[in-house]
Amino acid sequence: MIEEIVIDHLLKKLKVKAYMETPERDAPGEYVLIEKTGSSNENLITTSTFAIKSISTSMLGAAKLNEAVKEAMSTLIENNAVSRCKLDSDYNFSDPDATKYRYQAVYDITHY
Image 1: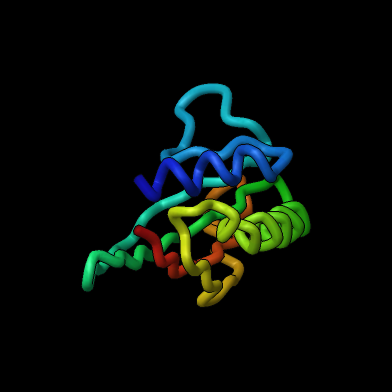
Image 2 (image 1 turned 90 degrees about the horizontal axis):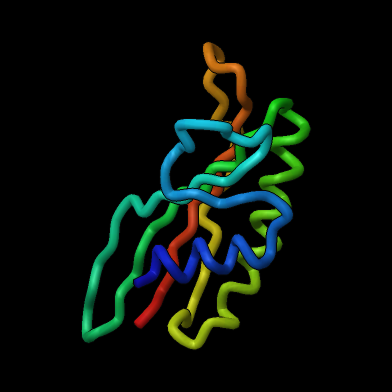
């Protein structure tokens, strides 16, 4: 399952926790959220789109964590089930009403 591959990879490569949903209790100051936003399949090859949110207590912290995410995702191809991992875009995704800052990186991942 591609969600498991991505989250396991980020947990190994990053110094922060990675989640598929916002932790309800004791959320750390910095963490990563992964969300599969869509997928398609043709000839037994699947492409999935992921939004990976880097969350921190400061804008600079979120930007630095986003850079660490991009570095980690650049090695996702090490997994034999993944044949391509392409960064589509990354950008500031902060909510002005929230107390946390976010960056988001969007990836297309081709996998079997």
